[in-house]
Length: 424
Image (cartoon, rainbow, N blue to C red; front, side):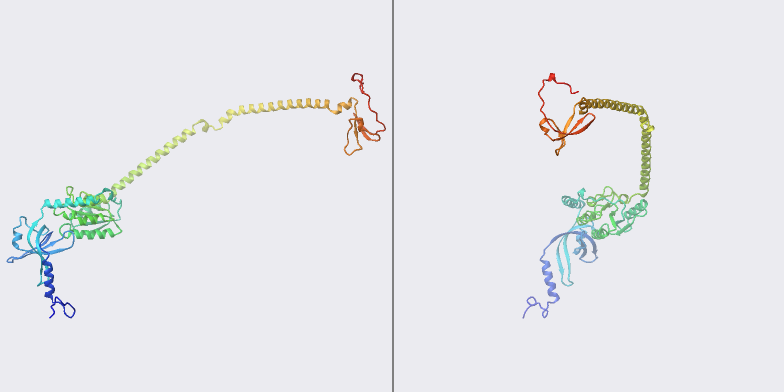
C-alpha cells in the first residue's frame, strides 16, 4: 500500500495532520536563535504556566508571537513593559493542533541605554560613510510654501505649537496634517507611509516631522535606519523638529533643515508676514530716498552745466570772433584785388611783348608775306625756287593783300650785310 508521503495527488491528498507535522518538522530544524524586537503585548494569566508576548519589528509592520515561562518575566532585572526593546533567545515552535507559529524563549534581556546609543552610533557611522549627512544634499526651503505637510502625534503639543505659531506669522498658510504615532513599535511604519504620501503630493512644498521631547527610548524611531533612508530619498525638503535643543536624533542630520523645537520649525518654514511687510515698507522708503537723492544730484549737475559761459551765452564765442572774421574777410578781399591787379599788369606786359614780336609789326616796317595760292595747301614762300613762272601768289602787306602772277623770277645776288639797304 502506498504511503501518503509517497503519493500526493488530487486523488490521494495529504491529510491536515500530515502537512502540519511536516511544517513542524522543518521549523523545529531551525534551532535556537537570538532575536531583537519591541514588546507590544504582555499577557500573563494567573494560574497558568505560559506567558504570551508579541515581539514587533520596530522598522517594519511585522510581529511574532512569543511564549515563555511567567517566571522568566519576573526574574528580569529591569521591569518589562510594553514598548521595551529586548533581545530574546528561543526556538521556533509550530503548534500542529492549531497551526500556529510562536517563538518559545528561554532567555530575555532588556536592551539598555548604552546598547541603544551604541547601535545609534553604528547607524550614524554607516549613513555618514554613504554621504547622507553631506551638506551639499540639503535642499533650500521655499520662501512662501503653497502647502506645508506636518507629521506629528494626534492633538500633541508639538502639533499645536507648529499650527499656532504658523497661523500667527501668516494667517493664509495651509497645512496638510498627518497624525501618526511618534513612539512605540508602530511609529516608524506609520511615519514612512505618511511621508511617502506627502512627498507625492505636488502641492506640498515642505514637510515638517515634529515631536515633543522625551527619553532616548521614546525618540528611537527618529534614529531608525529605515526612516532615515526614506527621508533622504524624499524629493520635498524635510524639516526635523524632534524634541528640544539637547535632543539630537539622527533625523536631525539627514533632514534638510534641523529645527531646535517645533516652534522653531514653524518660524523657519512660515515667514512672518508682519516682519516682511515692515521690510518691504523699509525697502520702499529707502528706494524712494535713493531715487530722490539721485534726482537732486543730477539736477545739481545740470545746473552746473547750465551755469558755464558756453551754455549761459552760447553766441558769445561767435560775437567775440566776429571782428576777427570781418578783418579776415577784408584781408582776403584786399589780397584778391592786389592779385588781380598784378596779373592784369603782367597780362598787359605780355600782350605788348607779343605785339612787338608778332608779324603785324614786321609788316608795318615795310615787309610783305608771299603765299602760293595755286596749290592744295597754300603756304608762305621761303625760296625763289618756289615761284615758278605763271604761278599764282598772294602778297600780304601791312594794310592788306593783293593777288599776282609770276612772269619772271630772278635769283638775288649775295650782298655784304653792311651794304644792304633798309626796305623802306
